View 1 (cartoon, rainbow, N blue to C red):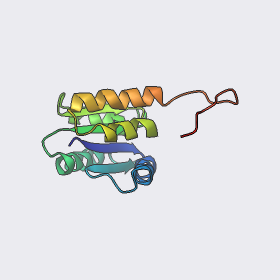
View 2 (view 1 turned 60 degrees about the vertical axis):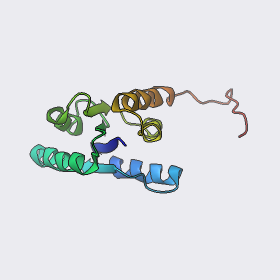
View 3 (view 1 turned 30 degrees about the vertical axis):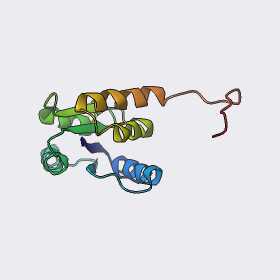
View 4 (view 1 turned 120 degrees about the vertical axis):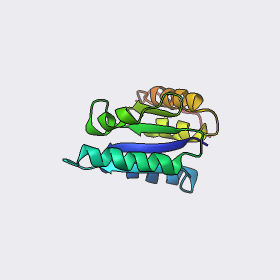
Length: 135
C-alpha cells in the first residue's frame, strides 16, 4: 500500500487527515501530516519528512502531497524525491487526497495519476444551473 505524507503549511495537513477520516469513517493507515509553521527550520522539516517517509513506506513507495509549489513545504521535498518510489505532487485538494487514498493499493505511478486526476476533476464551477441527480 502506497504511503501518503501531507507536507503543508500549518494547519492544512491535519485538517485534510480529519476530513479524510470523516469521509472514510476511520483514519486511513499509512497517512501522516507534517504541518510546517512560519519560520520553522527547513532542515528540521526535511528530517521530519524523512522519518515519516520511512515509517509509512511498506516498500510500495510514498506519495508526498504539498499545498503550494514553491512554498517552504514543497521546497523541502526536493531532496526527498526518488522517482518511482517517493513521488511529490503540489496543489493538494480534498478530491485529490480522496482519490489517492482510494487507489493506493495500486502502483505509485497509478496513485500519482489518480491523485492528479482527482485534483483536476474536483475543481468545477457550481451555480444554480447545475442540477445534481439524487443519490
